[in-house]
Length: 329
Ligand code: SF4
Ligand code: MG
Image (cartoon, rainbow, N blue to C red; front, side, top):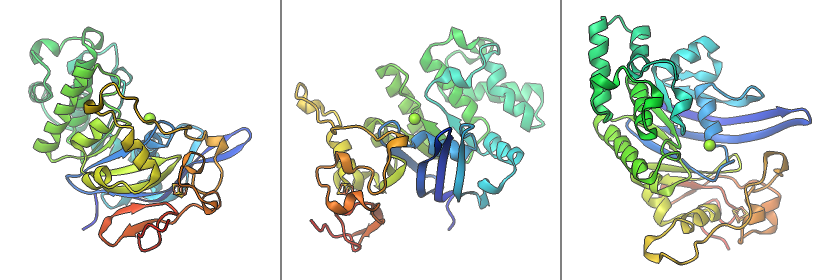
């Protein structure tokens, strides 16, 4: 049973005037059919870069050093640019934080949502319009007929994000990658857009990668979670396991920092320190400087991946655990 998407030992680095710096290291994970995988971590940990690598839209000074990205059986890393673009247009849809970046201010909403149908199908004008309007209704855009002729600036931020979601869905992608899709929106609108994603998950059985720094978002939609820190995946497991039984000190810190409504007014926990900037990363566990559990070995080598006897699905990279997944200190 091959997964829809499998990333294997992926390394990505940036080239600067003063040298080459590794931004993603040994990234390995998969997304199965009908599965929603969340990527969490603070900003600067490589979440968006991972998405960009999958889509073949890395910044100009970044490149894939090694590893593979296998999507529906084909290694995207080995594809020509043109074919990768094809995959991007038809099989993988991306939804970004800021809807305006995905929209053309000069084209009507209807034109933008229907564009891919014109490009990739032989449907008649009437059919295209019909499908576009049905899609607009599905994502909760009111008065679709009238809205068809509107321009992006005439819409609110939440409505624009619905338009972007309609554009992402209309191609019937196998995989949707959403990068902080609710972060730029007001709190009430965030909740509505999140509801829409949950509805998409249920009705379309879509596979998704959901990137967020917000556990409220991750918790409400993801089946499985990857925790990234400084360009590495440091823990992976089912949502419930990660929330109830986090193993990595970084994951524990993130979960302790989740705002708790019951403790309103109490000072929130924050992990001291910050993610090391790209050029200041050293060998060893990248969390060493911030970790209250650090040992001598932590600064020396990056810990191997450990699986747990009790739960083979959960893995962690931390020297606190022995090969057999036992807490050693
Ligand atoms: Fe902390 Fe060491 Fe584990 Fe890194 S490897 S998280 S520094 S205990
Ligand atoms: Mg980001």
